[in-house]
Picture 1 (tube, rainbow, N blue to C red):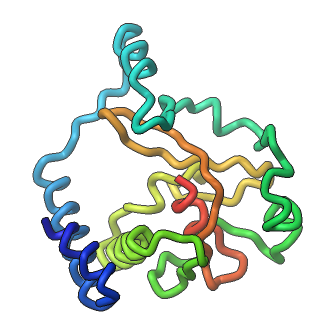
Picture 2: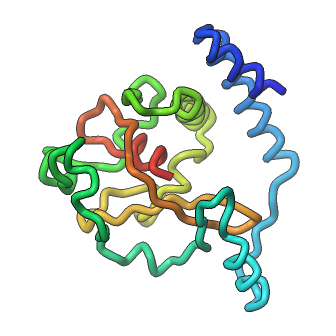
Length: 196
């Protein structure tokens, strides 16, 4: 109900009220997750894996089960020139940034919305960043891979990043064109999270 109210306020261009309602919805969600955590098992049976793979299609989009081996792959794309008319060229962060890093500092104030971005998503991203920073709970940083030895997302010179999503009780992966970005010119996390 609160989320619906926030969307209505956003449609009416009442941005501050919409942001307040999105923030309230996010806080209620986080409280509910603490009270009713979803238990995660480390091993699934073969039958469970088959069922989950068969049911990986939601609203016409595939959400394949998480696979640790994916983190070791170098990113390749089978249609490398699909967006060239909009972007000019695909480049690794190391070619356009002085010192690329996944996260400089989690902050809601560094996120910049692209013209094609979803405002409610960007608002949610801002709320999540502010929550993580204030409460020291990994909402954003725990789902970005690869990670360093202390569980923090790290820059991958090979270009392969994976966002771990939880769907039907297990970790999943996805891949979508990036749009949101950070005002910290060498920081990647808003784009990587929005990509998921």
